[in-house]
Image 1 (cartoon, rainbow, N blue to C red):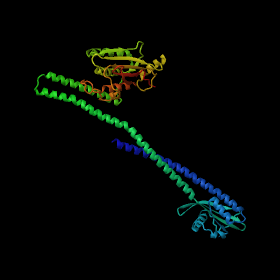
Image 2: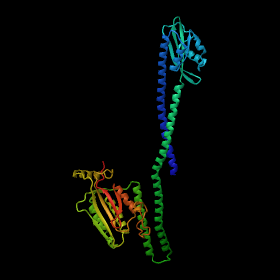
Image 3: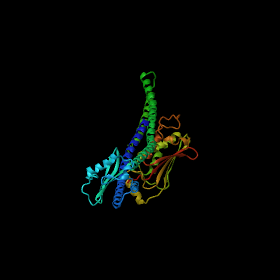
Image 4: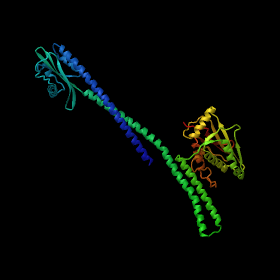
Length: 462
């Protein structure tokens, strides 16, 4: 699926880029070719003027002078005296056929009324016309002129092949084509790797979704199997003690309910539609309440349950109180579950100082956050609050520290605690991200793991 999409995206990018290059190349070629033709034609006209002025001043025409003019200006000349070709030109072996000379003279006679054979009443001034002629699929710059000389006249036919001009244009077109093809090849390689890199997250997400569905199906199948087997036992009446079976059914049903709730929360996080109700709270007071809430649980498990708060006042934090409670509950339950009896779990709050703003800025930022919370990740200042949940349990190996935040990941697969499905830390991380914060996992000095939640004091919006 993704391979086909990769090929299609690459082909689409190459096609669009090729079309853009083709359009731009055609525009550039048109401008350049127009400039080349205009430049060559202007040079042709300048050469004509020079040649006709020289002819007017020449008393006699020599073969050497004619050949020099042809060489200097890339001309082919045919000169007639009162309609008769010059004697030495009758023996010239040029590449211009007689029909081409006749075609040029006929065009001058038909279009401009300039007839070398019958010029009519002679004028005192030189008269010549210039035009473009096409003969046998080749193009020429041409000119036909009459120069009065005594009682007669001299007729001149000039042809300049456009072969060099067309060759320059052809070479330029081939150069543009080669450059476009090379650019398409390089861009094709770039688009191949670029689209592959762009699709990689989609492929990984799809793989994770498939793994998530498979893991969720497995987790749901286990309590469902237990429920159905106990229902069958109750229905058959083969065994007494229905209340015990009903208790098992109720327990497994609650377990399924917790799993479905966790999955729905993660689905809400993936769709970015989690509802939050931020307000300004005293985080140290919240931590005291959470500590008191879990004190009986710690006592029942034989754990030492500690809390550490700053001596000085803690700045207010704009956040969703219920979501933060949920995050702390996940981290604390996780620490309780992995800490052996007699161990210690510690809940601590600290302030990480950065660039402290003025009191006026604090008040302004708080008002702005209460009005428009969580719309931007730009912070009013760099101060942040750190909540650490540490334990002295078995700890987490370095190679598994990133994996613990993935879905359905549990370090100890042999744990019999069915209340956890490997989704808690993933949900906690999503809650931290929702508050523009993060969770940092580190080792507890001595032994164990420490989860530190870093929350900005203000998530200010513009």
